[in-house]
Length: 552
Ligand SMILES: *Cc1c(COP(=O)(O)O)cnc(C)c1O
Image (cartoon, rainbow, N blue to C red; front, side, top):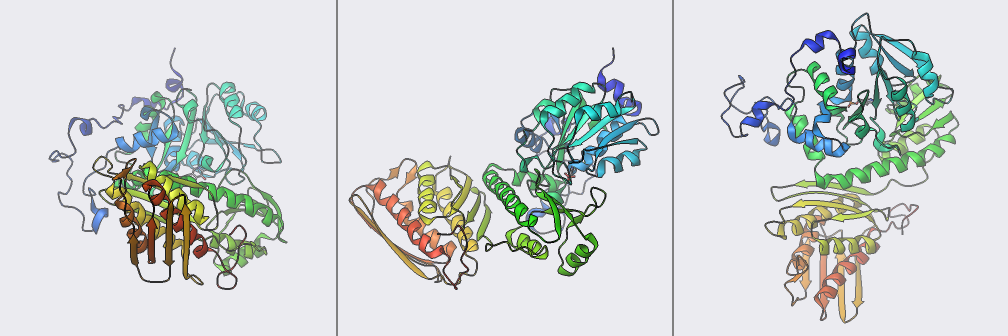
């Protein structure tokens, strides 16, 4: 009795020696070993700075650290995942592994992503096309009937949420398909799943011999230009399809970019961005329904909307003249248009082209990533939202202080830091303050109508006074003393320094005066009063800054 993979794979692939995806040589030697084995040039490339690091060396065939990080991200073991040059590359190696030219077939449900059929045709495999229903929904029973009696059907591609329609396919329907087509590998493309409410089937694919899940960093993690994606399946299937990869598929620069963007301090900002894109998508959908040229709007689970418009040629000319690129999908539906959700300003421009007014001013957002040898920090501030507030500096009392600033300031704050706390809290405290000030400065933009503000705050026996001048030069005054050296892991002597860092990075004069008995009260009162003063400063005010819904 041969295994499913032995029955399905091309004989040429089965005859290839297994690839060593763990890159044995890398495990036997340390990264500082003298490398005279690969005919590399010993000198770094003549490009500036961090881009040059290690680029004269071949990358690891399957970079072990990135593989661990992506496997953890998707909830599977590293052996169940192979990193590819985007999910596109995973589609290609699956087809090359299983489809013999002129003999085998794949199936797709149209309208869908075009790469499945394209790679199949390139390989000389037949493309069996079944249609989604009138509502672009997937019907598993109909699909199984449509391909019954086709022993040459090696791969069935399902895209969920589907590109370009956005329709999700319920996981239970995917599993029904896998149960009903035991001699076919179901390839579930989850390129957009982060923007949907769907549960991923990645963990299921790691156990089930006839299910593969595709994921990508291109969409949710903003890494389309780096080309990093993966296939997830049983370790046997992953080892098999890895044979169809070139020897060093992933550029070093892409590996570095992927590791950097997936580091722990970046995750909260990614999460916040995805939430924003979803919220904007849900806000734009009903507005576009009111457009005079739009017949229908499909709001599925992707970072895009699928529209049907009356006169696509006229719209194409208009968009060309405005310099706005949207994707026309006439094969999906006559007048079919896929509109990606962009930044506030981009969405506003697109809506205006559709004859719709967004009705709000662009949000004032500021994002900063800041990496040094001591800390890695990512901050996102949205002055026109009061949630989320997610703060993880690594020092819980400091988290509480930033939470006070944002809560009393009335703005959304996401801040995460990976710092060298094993040495001392100093770097994390200072660098978080600097990154916060820079992000706030970015969110404030041109600072029109912003000036001098102050707030005084009693807290039991304590009194704190904070004055800020946001349009002024950096200047810091701090009057106050603390008796205790620490509050939890937070050193009280740093408060003075933190406000100085706020002033420097924000470009503001900040004067703090605090008196009282209790050091916890005194510290907290400084941050609260700072938040209250900011609340006045960031408020959009009449003509000076356009008013907006949701602002204080
Ligand atoms: C964008 C996209 C991909 C490919 O993504 P990369 O990882 O950039 O290759 C795969 N499937 C679908 C449905 C897509 O829309």
